[in-house]
Amino acid sequence: MKDGSGLSRWPVFVALGMLVVISVVFLVEFAVSTGAELQKTPSATLDAASYQDEVLPLLADADPQRGAALVEEHNCIACHRMGAENNIAPPFQGLAARAGLRRPPLSAEAYVYESITHPTAYVVEGFSPAMPQNYPDLLTGRDLGDIIAYLLSPDAY
Image (cartoon, rainbow, N blue to C red):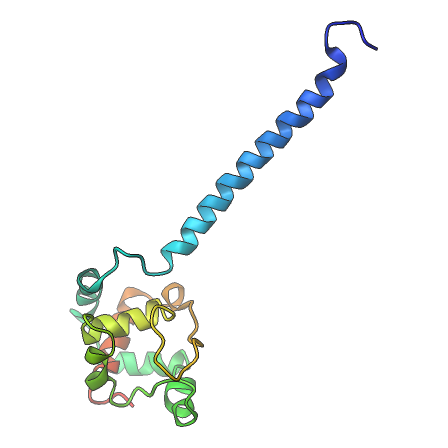
């Protein structure tokens, strides 16, 4: 059906147009989802000072006793208390003394905050990166503050 007007080619142009639109939508979705994933990991702009800016408000009214209950509720003790004996994860006991020295220039509270919210940013030598990475989605700011306060207290074990 060639009549010289190009009508026989319109299905090809429609198919190509749809392919272009689908490709653009895919690329945009890919870029957005990749950007969201990158935000879950520390960036170059997240440093000792910015961690302090994040964690200090969380500790303002923190309740270490509630933090102790949350550590048990979220079963952190399976790896950090019982599993620590088998080198599954570093123990909570003595964390307050080690935390400030573990990852300079992070303060103790900034280090613990990073360890919970970005557990693969730094993995203690001799341990696997086995910490669940969904705690930022599971814990509220209050929960984080309470847990950090507990972990940095002398009662943490």
